[in-house]
Image (cartoon, rainbow, N blue to C red):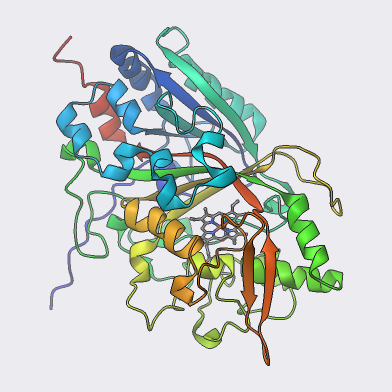
Length: 453
Ligand code: HEM
């Protein structure tokens, strides 16, 4: 039988941010622009395109950093995209993340009314994600980005935020992050020297980039025209504040020793702070395992179907159940996305249990061709509802909207342990849905007004 034809990915046309990890160490900045004049918006785009990094330039970059560019629905409108094309985008993208708050469980402190400007506001048009490996290079690439609009009165910067890697590649809670991502079929060249873990099966490229077959064998037909969508994708941008003092205090109050605190923290996350997965290291942290990229993702939940090693409700198990739902009707491959996370702010010094009022946390770019069945499904069904693991309304202990009422169940023999009173350890500071086009599509967008001029 003939193998189904899978077109090779056009790495020179797909933005690096989609398929490539961020550098380590990294520094960077997110910049948001507002466009008040379509022609000036397109001029800005023409000037910035040469600085946008394609995926094939990740390993040997010709630029001092990596710039990614994406547009909100309002941004595409401001650039003058024809109505028929605007109407062809999926409803969740057209509405924007704030309008989806009820689905995403963004209420209480996480409600869009509490978000930072310009999130949830129609002023957010163009989002730039700029990464570099050092401050000097970052300054150079930011200067180039700035040149694209410095003399354009109707293109303005409405938001800037710096981000940087914390010591040891840890997040503010002290966990190593950025360890797992799905393996995109056709995205890795042998010369990259990267060997995906055997248990991390390849996922069809169409799940993450439009123009290729997805897990259902379908190739995206919208948005139109094809020139705009080919090699493009969607990004769910989420900015979180992390309340590190609250996390430490909760551990202290519910454990009887520092070792037990560490175990409880690992049970909430599904990995030890070093990154070692609980299913491979159930009793003690194993820093060598955590730091070994060939082993720290090579695991499944098949030997832990009672959750005695890694609780069903642990963040990583809920949000990426791997083979844990294999008896279920759910096809987990339809709910994967690429995750590009960065941290911001300084670390709260070791041992401090009182909040110092500083802003610190993480920004996630959750990337995939299907916002609704990927990010929205995972956020609404797996992160903020416990039904799929028979845990009623129990939410993710780390990223759930718990608000002081949260519950966390740790399976144990002879009796499970159930913790109560979990607060929100993380709060949403803002978010938005963006469309991240391929490089030729950026050119197409920049030429939009040519016939009218
Ligand atoms: C402030 C918020 C968050 C924190 C502190 C956090 C923390 C972590 C940590 C420590 C890991 C394990 C290491 C790694 O692979 O990076 C992880 C994995 C993961 N997180 Fe989060 N996360 C947050 C938000 C989210 C959100 C909003 C999503 C998606 C809706 C998400 C999806 C995932 C996925 C898919 C994994 C991989 C799981 C695996 O290893 O199998 N996370 N997260």
